[in-house]
Figure 1 (cartoon, rainbow, N blue to C red):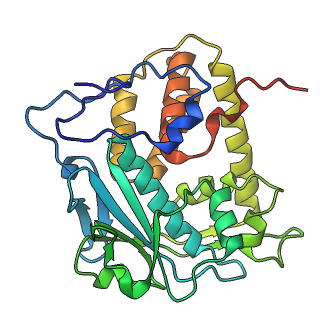
Figure 2 (cartoon, rainbow, N blue to C red):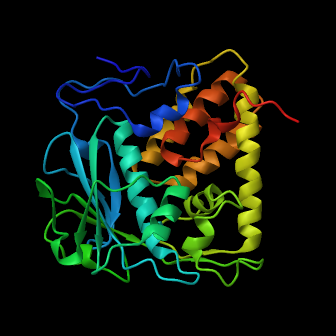
Length: 312
């Protein structure tokens, strides 16, 4: 059996609609997505996603306690003021994991674990500005070993929390520290207040964080953000132009590389693939359109935003 993208769906895997798929509702349906050959028997979650486990020091297969459902816990130390956005990066990695899992028709339940008081409205607005979907539940750090209905499959942690590394179940995905450094009039404001504002495109911050391996430190300077904002804007303009061309199937080689990148949450390779594709004159524009829009279901950069907009 296949889904709307032509991907093979394993018997017993429950198909759920990804919230990000609504981004493409105003565009024609993506017609083809090259998929790996169907295998006999049931496909387990372990063949779909793997992550670097901070406890074992190596990549490990994700095995869910309940078939068809992935439980993710984002351990947030607190939305502190100043330039520290490590907490936001933890939420972003959990969001990326959920989006990647949904591409494989898995339901995802994300829990936000926090010490004491939950993040305030400014922090929630900042997360929303980065396209991070709200968690399904909240819990204190001591309660984070389980989620509603069962154990956690993946703990997304930073060095400030480390709770996932001590948990008895699931993998522990360690997220590196992140700083948002501004040199303009925002330099004295807390990072969450800046991101919640209506000035620069906050998705440039999402792009910048995805441009580095999630376990490495990220120092987002004004120069980096300006460059990434221009890149995101350019990609949106190109997607709007390509949308006017006849649709073409995504080349099998590109789909395989994209699938592999999202399979272990390698956003660095996924973005590099899109950069190379942008310049590849041998790939039809219709195929470029389909690839960028499909990849955006995980990347969450709102790349179809400019479709149908007229200049000037």
